[in-house]
Image (cartoon, rainbow, N blue to C red; front, side):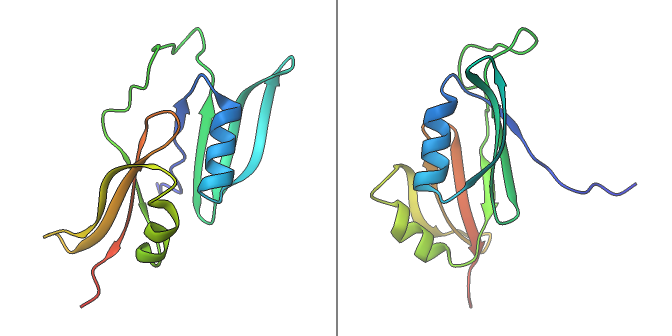
Length: 124
């Protein structure tokens, strides 16, 4: 059996703010949404081959705060250009650097406090 894709669903209390951050700052597109009355309760945000869904807290999983203990690690082309476009617009977790495991990467926080790592292999 082949696994085809991973598309995390992250909880947020501010879907409109999340949509603004991902589309306005990170260049994602809103592919879908589900409304509960007038309130957006779920959305799907995509850029190239990356899809991240967000939902409001619900009765089954209402943690009350950001609960991701790790980060979302996104492989990119031209991490330097992405760093230059984001470094002054986001909260930086760590700046662009080369790591001993041969990846060049940086990390930021989104509007919810989730950590997003952007990386590409070190060019030799």
